[in-house]
Image 1 (cartoon, one colour):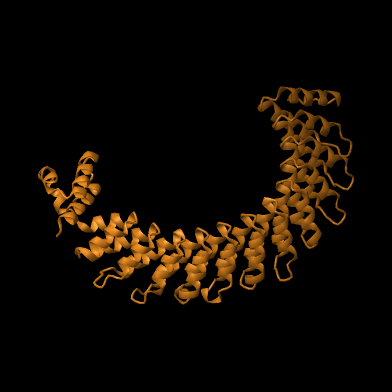
Image 2: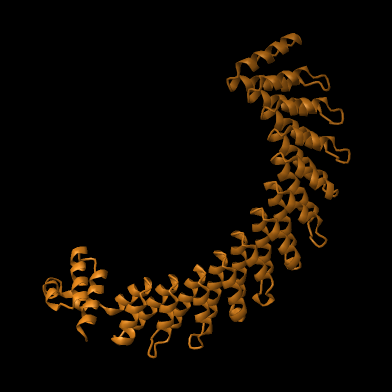
Length: 438
């Protein structure tokens, strides 16, 4: 082996050796440049392991860093034997770092021991990083058949990182190898990462075998991510596949997040199948968050929501103190809210100290408030120390609250240390000439 080549190998070996200092490495490089073996002999004597350093590791380093000349020196000029393991590792390093010229060099070796797993892994890495030219090298090489597993993994990696050109190439050349689970996962990954162009590509390939569950899961993800464009794409191209349960869940998610565009799409699409139950749950989610526009939108398009769901929506708004939402629901003439739901809503508002909602319920004649409802509201308001609400419940004239509830409320306030409320209830009983003792 020529002196220059020997010294270059030694210098590279030194670069990879963690036991050699930067100073020692510099001396080796200088010796290689000056072709002075005498400068290297003392170093070799001190570090004999350098002379036996595996050239495969040197090739991996050269491939990782894109050193074509060094890789060519090892493989073509010196004809150094490289094991299949290091040849494969070098191929993956070059592919991962976008060094197409090194990949070409490694693939053209006549006696290469690169395995299909190394080639598949290298394709996956190139796809992940969007190196289209390297991906094409692997797909065009007839000596390296790509398995279904690696074709699918490459598709997923490209979909995750938004490399639409790589996805298009994979679908064009190896889509027959891509199985349903990889295609579906790629679709969900693209939706999750807002890659609308890739979603369109995947939906346009019928042979990718998108399953109903994958299409439905993708629709839910798009709703969660507030991506109206992708929701529209899925509805246009995959609606026939999407089970009703997924459409309903997507509606609930969009309503919860306040996405008017997506809710409108799901409620108005001519083929979308949303049950009244799912619409009712979406209404409840919107009411829970006090989204008045969303509540009005759902009621506008779905007049078939049952009284139970309407009542639960009213309870949710009352619990969280969303006065405008509760008032809107209660004032709709088409809404038949049951006395039980009115009572529960009143109690929830009282327990959480929502004075305006309690006042509104008491003032509305269409609300059927019973003595029991008012009494239980008084109990929970007293137990939580909401003096203003206790006061207004005692002052209202619509129903007569029985002494039992007043005594119970007084006890609740006393046990929980709400002295002003306890005093208020005691004074009320004295004014009513009652002998109840708290």
